[in-house]
Amino acid sequence: LSHGSSSVAEMQSRLAEAEAAGLVPHRSAFNALLSRRFGAEEKMTVAALHTDNAGEFLSREFIELLDKDQVSQSTCPPHVHELNGIAERAIRTIFSLVRSNMVASGATPGLWPHLVRHALDVSNRCTGPTVDAAAVPDSAFATSFELLSGEKPKVMGIMPFGCRAFAVKPREAYSKTRFDTRAWVGINLGRSA
Image (cartoon, rainbow, N blue to C red; front, side, top):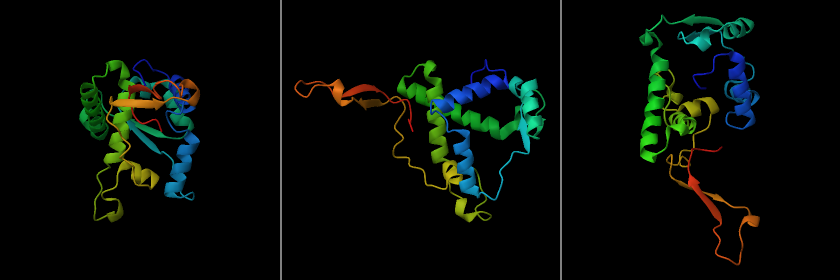
């Protein structure tokens, strides 16, 4: 979301647009994935939320949403990022990947949503949370994607951001008798599915 998003209604509207465009899975599909992964008998609910003091987390609409779902909220003291270390480190890792991909591909800053989506895809499919191997031996080396979906991630399809990509033209768009190209040339902006 952009820094201009200040209300929950606006964030929910953008999420609905992204779901409709297929950019993020629909919430019901996500809930089905969770129930398949963790079992339908276990109801997954959020009981507590720890946030920083960003305006979107302190807005009246957001607090009403938490109250409606009976979620307790705690916040970090202002300007003390060390107390929100896991989130700060995750953001640092993602934006480090974004910056390196942007420089390597020669992409403009206007492509940042695609860069972030690509960095998240790579990070979720190649790294996982720190787990005590003695406590949970099966998931000691599992990626975040694998822990959530129960499937090994397919990483061979992750192409470098900004590399040349080809989109095959429909049959009506080229002639068999001329030397027309059969694909449009473009650049890879990340995984489409």
